[in-house]
Image 1: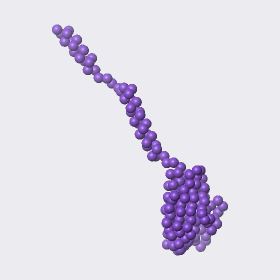
Image 2: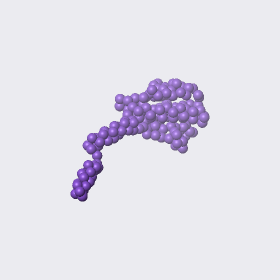
Image 3: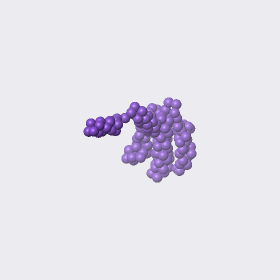
Image 4: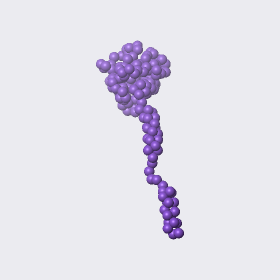
Length: 170
């Protein structure tokens, strides 16, 4: 009787033994879910070249508007100057054009995707250094409308100014 009870207890223990670990199917499901999540995150984290140029153009449009207002408030001409790698803002002093270094908003910045090709229509009237584009804002509240094109490879963005202080990015 004791041997029979012992045998039944051993069979019961063998039947209720829990397994340790995961099945191959469970591991595959986890890997697929992690892969999908990583793919979605990487698509949102890395911007395309077009998006980067668009962001630069949005920033420049806002800073151009600020520069134009600075010219009116300071009662002195201000300018936007850019080359293939960077852009900066200047103010006309008695001894010539000086960078607005003390102004954190209008400090010199690099393009995120350099080198950048710059074109302006109509052509700027004021000359700048070679391979440099300069847009000058006077003290008057009305300026000449223009279109500034930023291009890098096949991607391009246009900043349009209507001459009365509105800047849009296309």
